Length: 166
Image (cartoon, rainbow, N blue to C red; front, side, top):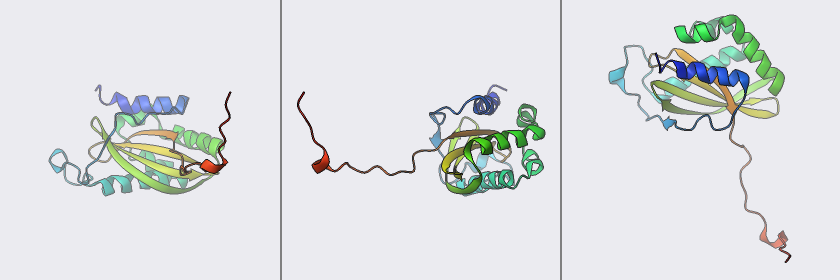
């Protein structure tokens, strides 16, 4: 029961604030998910997990909240009833602007969960949509995190930098 609290706490934190560094302690997923810990029909690869997460975000964007809620674990259903999912999504859209697209994805593991972070384009900003999935591919957690900067770092022009003694 203790490991099931992690996604619920993440969800609660996402509702209260968008904090930096929530992905610390997450380890990248190997290309193949450990098949010995899964039942038939469970996601087997990082691509399977990413496809499940992309489907969830696509359903949210299309306002198919019942389809998303049907994928919830029992704990997720208790923490976020399907009726509240629309409110959560609408609050995100009100803050960030309309959903445009999924730009990239990364997959990792945290405790007993597979974590997929989809960097999504909203209005004029990018937000990381974190989807936690259990070993069977059920939707176990949702949070919205700041996306890493999409502006590449460039070295400053040394000629234009002037150092003046103090």
